[in-house]
Length: 260
Image 1: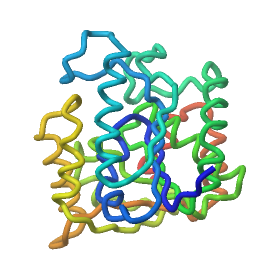
Image 2 (image 1 turned 60 degrees about the horizontal axis):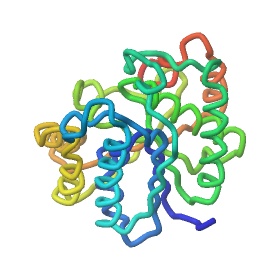
Image 3 (image 1 turned 45 degrees about the horizontal axis):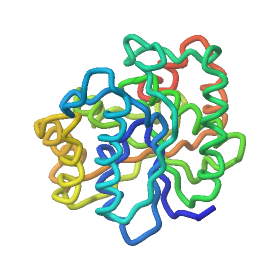
């Protein structure tokens, strides 16, 4: 298996680029890969595919993702797992994962991404802001692998976009060191135009208004600063162990921001 400098684990097609497109573009000279976990979908509100046609939608969205990966020279994987609505979830956001019912699915995903994580120098996972069930599952699986393989030291969490834009003041100012989580932030500056060019590729999903919000959020992370993406790193392995033991409310517990 090829070793990568950066591995971006994306719950859906577009999540990695919307959240860390600036980082991906800035590191285009390095070996990078994007792994899309739930790459089978029938959701493309602006794509023109017949309603419920997952083959048409999945092909369309893969083309968008491939276009961005080609722009920055990154490799990409599309895993064959259906997204939450196709698995019977109704609300999707703020709905807790069905850990018992989806045990086999979780095992398969872990098998798919474990070696990819181990063979990469740095790994980027969603923080699960917004608590979309697929983001929560992706975050949780990454944490489990990090504990099992003792590789949390190279694992970082990105702020899920466009979810962060819904409460920009909260997500810009809240202190994630509270509640024992001990997540420490790092800022990555990036040229805004390069990220803009990557965001607007996803015309099947949002209007350009949403992408402008993402850039405004990036501009507002640091007062009188440039454009930034913020990543977080866990400094307490014991906290992660306690987090993963919480079976009663896994959706709420994974979002570190709600642990203050």
